[in-house]
Length: 170
Image (cartoon, rainbow, N blue to C red; front, side, top):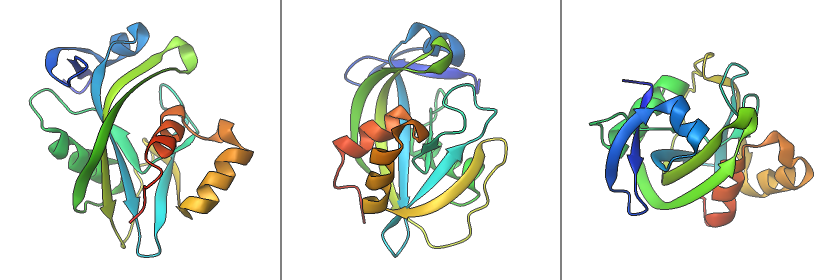
């Protein structure tokens, strides 16, 4: 069931489940989440997507993002993926949500009802090498400067979320 994701309408009401790759090939609206973790220095934890990822590989993005499993709450999924990808968990609060649709590499389309979570963490990060190529902590101002200089190094959804939630910071 890990390759099945939840299809939703514009109100985030579940309307079915479908295979992940098919959903991304056909650009169907589906439920997702994005996590933004900050340390006490107000730096955001970024991850560089592993080169083996099926889209947006090798690009820098927010701390963690994924899809809930059928029957799993969005909060449960966020905590599960944080542990699976980065080896830690922390308190998360849902900041907001938004819908976006963008073309990706390999002929795929991301069309997500994205729940945005924010949290604080100040401990060891243990990246899962099959998911994460690298990590870094960075201030919001340095991050925005880096995106202006090198937008091609960042995932499209991450740039959208940063523009949409310019208040992102703890």
